[in-house]
Length: 189
Image (cartoon, rainbow, N blue to C red; front, side, top):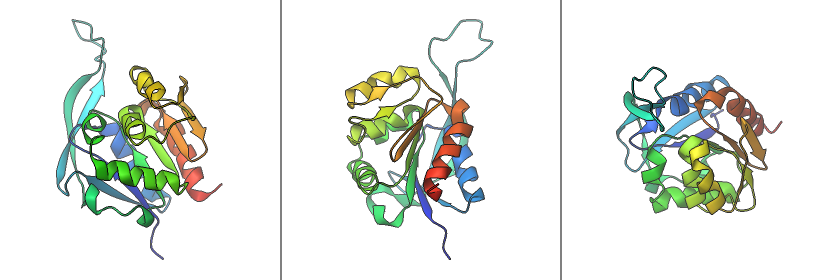
């Protein structure tokens, strides 16, 4: 029997821990992660964190190069019907890929089908652009709270929030709780 597929949209500057933790975690429960991007090619990840020991304090996250990850399919070629769910990671990528109409189409289609969607950090920018969080309660990194409100959602500062088919988390620090809830949703328990 084929594994249920989980769509993972990325772009250059997707956050490494936001992306690789679910990329390796989901197959442990029998799910196949399909990485999609604006084009099917190799992408750069980044590390996002506020440096703990910088001689000059940072008010925002510093961005450093991370690992590479390959998208095996372009957004335009993704069919929502082929997927059991979707995992949207953060980093800088969502800021740019949220303009891709094919990504927004497939996000809406997966959402309208009631399939589980997990989202962490800046990934909320994609859910807002796809107009799928209206009337929902979500969480994200605090600096993206405005994106939640602009999308018509209620923002709360919690480790993880489940609202029907959506499960959201603030940052990669919340990956364990996020994945626990997402896997439960995918398994229907």
